[in-house]
Amino acid sequence: MGAAIAAILPEAVAVAISPIPIIAVVLLLSSPRGKAKAFAFLVGWLIGLSLVGAIVLLVADPASGSADDGPADWVGWLILALGALAMLLGVKQWRGRPRRDEEPPMPKWMSAIDGFTSGRSLVIGFVLAALNPKNLALTLAAAAAIAATGLSGSDSYVVLGVFVVIGTLGLAIPIAIALLGGDKASETLTELNHWLALHNAAIMSVLLVVIGSKLVGNGLQAILV
Image (cartoon, rainbow, N blue to C red; front, side):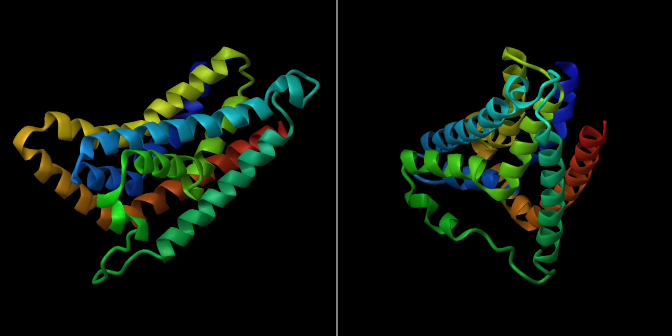
């Protein structure tokens, strides 16, 4: 199990420090009933990561995939494809980054975030975790990596749980700041929001290229061994 946890740590950290979801939580916290909406967003995020990961583990179950008690043969190809996709997304993000004198673009839905209900916040959290291309690719890659280690039964879902918990820490931090930061919480969150918005493209570009390279290597190893 330790090897499986080590295998998914890079993807989990990359999901955890995704700037756009963290910015969304910071904006929710500054809106009316912000703490309740931020918590709902966090719950939606947890459900999204867990659902995608669980589906991959179910499909890649060694009992249904190959005859030698190893992971399904297509798992290696999936890891390879996701690695290539992550690298392409990283390059695209870098090429589309704002220039020095440009304001970093934010998703259009963020302009309406003050009017979000807790229910809509939950849905947006789920969508960003489960359907956003970057997070979807990273979650699929992590689940495929778990499957490739050959774990079966409850152990694979324990490792998935570790991935989900680590992948949620980035959202939990601003909520913890809002709850425990006292009078300086608002100032701290504003500074965090500004820094993440400014460096969003660079952060994700580097992460995606590095992790994509790792996944390509892991996929080739799984295919050729």
